[in-house]
Amino acid sequence: MSDMPAPPLRPRVAPCALAAGLLALEFLVIGMIFKHVIDFDCRGNWGVTACGTASKSLAALYCMIAAVGLFSMLRPALFRDLLSEAGHDARPLLLNLAGFVLAMIPVLMLQGATGTAMMAPAFALWIAGMGLILTGLAGWLAPRFRWRAFLGQTGLPLGVALIASGLAPALAVRLQPIWQIERISDVTFRVVTMLIEPLGYDLYVDPIRKHIGEGDFILSIAPACSGIEGIALVMIFVSLYLWLFRSELRFPRAFLLFPVGIAASMVLNAVRIAVLLLIGLHGQPELAVGGFHSHAGWMMFTIVALGIILIARRVPALHRAPVLRAARTETLPPLWRDPVAARILPFAVFMLTAVVAPAISMTPAMLYPLRVILVAAAVALVWPVLRNLVWRISPLSWLAGILVGVMWVLIPVAPTEGPLPYGTLSGGMVALWFLFRGIGTVLLVPLVEELFFRDYLETRLRGSEPDSPAPMARVILAALITAGLFAALHDRWAEAFVAGLVFSLVARRSGRISDAIAAHAAANLVVFAVAVVTGNLAII
Image 1 (cartoon, rainbow, N blue to C red):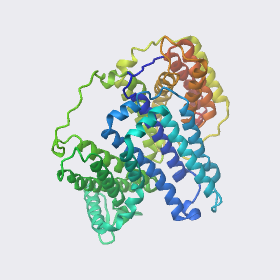
Image 2: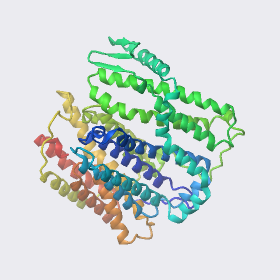
Image 3: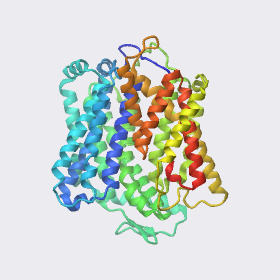
Image 4: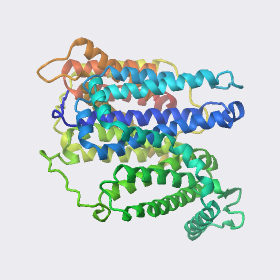
């Protein structure tokens, strides 16, 4: 088991990356479930104001977090001191987990509910849950005395940045009337038409009503689809950037970021609508309108806002004096030789493909071969590090894995109703799909999950040095937290929690992550074999 402590008084990058990834995952799950999964008509029961407040609150949190990232560019020394002990205490992650549980409790209250009886309890649980989620991550990133020192030195600028970014989503809506929305809609419609027409579709195009489509799938590019909200958000963030870095920037040249931001927002919004139209024209109208449309807008805003700011930081003409980078006291290894990247990158690719697949296909499991190829490419990239691991495996590891697999298949699971996971594939393509499914399930998934959960995350949570074993209470806590997070990724969370504890015990016993990988692979082999023989792929 590896342990890679960061130098003192420098930001501990890996815990910060873990905190950012965990927060993004939690917000994504909360947003997706409450918007698209549970059977609850928010506007029909609570009204536009309450539902808009709930939706905009999550967006406001996104913007506030982005503002903190922007502020870190302004005061890098303060952030280095703040984050110098990140990840030293794992206990705050329990608060984070408790907050996530609280925020998810309204699922049980709202599923199939009607009326406003559950509105106040739901909002109370959401507020308390979000507070604990953020408090837990703040405690994971820095102890209280460092937060007190940090807040004492940042003062008014950080407060202004947080307030402005928190109000940004609501302000973006309020600013819509001052824009020439009809003209922006006209430009968006023309760009979408220019992008789609050369592809050979027999399109119905009505420039007066701004309708475009084919057959039963017709899009109306109304003012609401002009991307004006995204443009307003980008302008707010550019304004915030100009204010925070006003002492460094050269005016009036810096004001060029406004037209650049508007143009980039309009172009990417047109691309978003064109992609949405293509998805609908290819027989997936529900995916186009209900899945892609609702999330691609925020992706475009993030790309434009951060892209403009990052580019602006590298354009000398926009600054009063050349910005000289401080010489680094140590050279970071390239990505393919970085031991932290080797444990995180393949898992990040695995999770990213799991999120993207449902957004682009109504049968995401059919894309599993593509996911296997992408994850395998990530593993190949960091293989120079992984091949140096101790790959000696104890026979007890295989036995433990087989027992986990037997437990998994003995607990009955009803076959999934609906379309087959491999979709419309047939003949040899089905056999090829099963081959990739087996490679992913038995070889790649155990490797990437164990490297991340047991070799990286659990080791960091224990926080012990190689020659100084961690207290048993901390070892147990680290195993429980890791198993809990591991279980959260599985539909069969109870079985996954037990499996996670077994894999942790196997790795802890020998001190080799290869034993946990072998146990996980043996368990998955048993499960996959039974699933193929019985035809019940739901047990995987």
